[in-house]
Length: 202
Image (cartoon, rainbow, N blue to C red):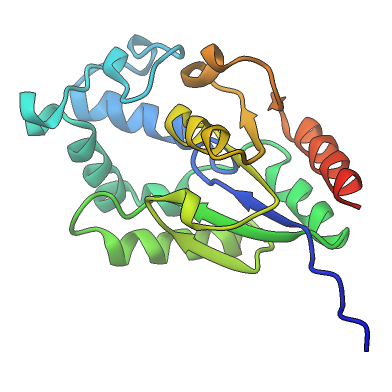
């Protein structure tokens, strides 16, 4: 009896890749800090120090954790953020091609928000008709297997590379120092990179 071939697994990060997380967070951050939205630059680095955020040790109220908690509690950020253009549509196209979509996200890093984070995430995925077989909330993304990954966070991208795993870099200002290997600037490019990886795998 022939064993059916395992489907191609695509490990997909959400924030900054499928969800326009930074675009949704920016007006919330401006309101939180009493600034105008255009005072917060569109070019930023990981941790958003350019927006005035500090390490939690330097002042919790000005830390990313405090802003994130405010955004989820008061604005339902993870339910209301818009999608990256073409992301949901492209994931539906890939699913129809037989791609096993595995969502891999680290949204449980701020204490006291786990229930809201999970609920808002599931609601967002359903509202945007994003197909997926698995929804994984993990800090160590290397613990989750896939044939190809996509992420925007430099820490995760470098970890995938160090472990010999292929990861599409979804372009944003935080990761432009990592080179152009498997870089996608939009979801049309993501589709082509995934299709090519499927072909390579046979």
